[in-house]
Image (tube, rainbow, N blue to C red; front, top):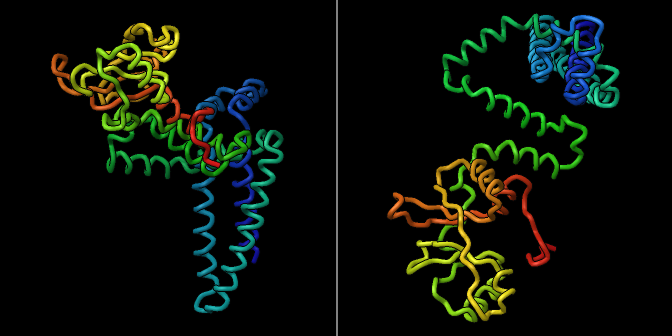
Length: 319
């Protein structure tokens, strides 16, 4: 019985410490480390990656549970009912006093608990250093290429924290979805975001001014691509405001469009459109002379990958 209470107590300390570290902001951690009386240099390495302490607590927790289960089995021997009773008691106490209550306390009093718990978690991390070294070596043997992508590892850690609701400031699912979308956006290409050519509305070059105005007004779009001979030969675009200014009496100016390829990273195209102050890009394939359009991407399409659907008064209501 004493073993069970000891294990639950250790788990409570690990859980409250990990929860407190995850709850406070990185800015708060920096301020606290810089104003500590001593040991700031030793603590600084945890600032850039506070999840190291969280992972150490998780690893130690697994070892505690495994060790406790093994010791209970050894103590109970062949007494099956005694073993079941002890394990059930351990799991109930672990859930209530080792997880639920410590997590609530860690979130509620995080700034107060962090100065006390971070040194404890540092000791745990140092004690588990041999295990981490072995795990790192095995991972390099199994998947050496992945270790080169430190950014992917950091992003995966952040996504895990988001899924667990570790940041109290992100109080809604929508907010967490936006941040998760930002992290995933770096892996997407233009092909993942573009609208295929079959879904595009475009008008042919050479239409009379009144016919062009009529088609654009019926389309519901503010920017319409213009093609020559075939829809896959986009030569520019027209803006509805230029058409309105001329009241269909003269042709509006042909505006340039950005041209890109399908395998280009989507974030690069987003930055290019923002720098060039353009709203539309046509996606092409083939060489420069015989390039043909296979799709189109708007600035709104790219932004929706980050923040979700952007709806205005002209969109159909989902209600």
